[in-house]
Length: 134
Length: 233
Image 1 (tube, helix red, strand yellow):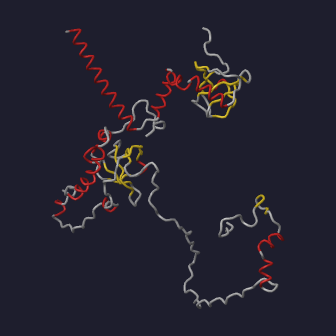
Image 2: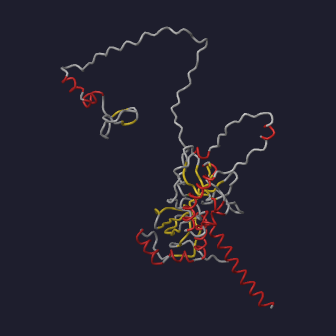
Image 3: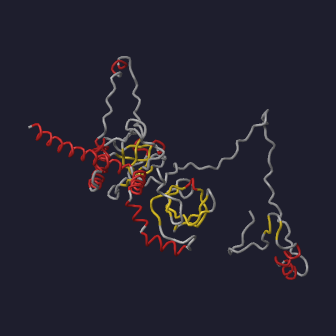
């Protein structure tokens, strides 16, 4: 199968190890076979091993090593944040984060809601069953 | 510790590194103004004669010397104070009791008593936990808070919860057999009234929050997949 996501200047990647775990960064330059220069609006531009990055589908249009202002403007223009949060990968991460931050009371409320929803579904199912067999 | 000047400013001889001051002896002599003090005193540093020590009352030699040296215990200036309350526990916090008869019950924290134990109530109507003392170590503090402003807990202290002292009755021969059947421990009516008065205001503020009443009535338990060190309470 051919590759679909390439390491290129402007590729958005997710940091999967280290101090900036979970951040979306932009690859602004390639240093050598193993390292890239990455930058993000809330971090100092620095090098990162490719093994610490997971490439995403999103790519923005920038020149090699832009300055911070240009980078932020390019991110805004490409609407990276919304694209990410509406992608299924991004949505999954948001849900995981929400679940991890749940209070004991929140977990209780969710349990009640699940039971309620299951009850409603079961009622509908019972109705449908009656229609087909009756 | 070197005594600081009254006004907060650098000491006269700041350290360049530990053990080496910035100024030499002669410079420090000048900075301390010893020359001015000497000048005021006519060339010599002012001397004060020692005060005659008050004559100590004549001690009689002791009558008895112990055979072995008696060791004196070391001095201990520690003061007893109630256990430090965790920052997450404030009046109105919902706590999860971890041990004892009410383990797993979610309970409302009222105040910390002088012994360090936490005063806690179910409320009784909701989950059967009465006004009770509980140790801080056997409790998980959740971040859910209940409004406790309408509750007066001034009158409860450790003595309220102590065991009642019964007067010992002299037992005669015949009474040995009768004394076997002890009277049942009935809760006195005033304790029941205290419980009701504390719970009345609490229940009102609990019912203002949706689902909170059933939350307090349910017990906490670990289910499959729950990792306590990763849970946020």
